[in-house]
View (cartoon, rainbow, N blue to C red):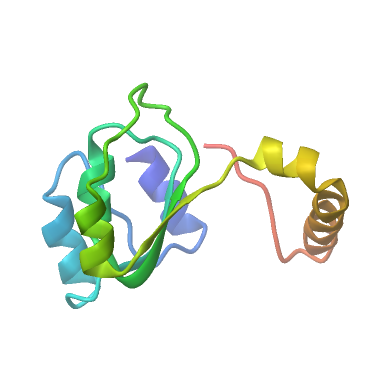
Length: 123
């Protein structure tokens, strides 16, 4: 509940306590059956496959990490049926391979923070 409140306060249109509801049904209701365009998943685990089932046509599922401790198994047919992409986002490796791009990104983030367009939040 605390993280949901923090997300709402930060401007989230909708929040979902995914452990307490039928995730697919709830997402379909919230998106008028469309599904979500992007899933940012730092957790993995048991809800990953359920989350993929909530994707919109052509969506992107970003694999950030496995905080749940288990690496999910995503059936490839789900990706095919939704024409969606499963994308691994390994920021540390990207920084090593593209230090100038990382420096540019950090400069843009610093600029947005200075302009008040981006703020940090700890919940």
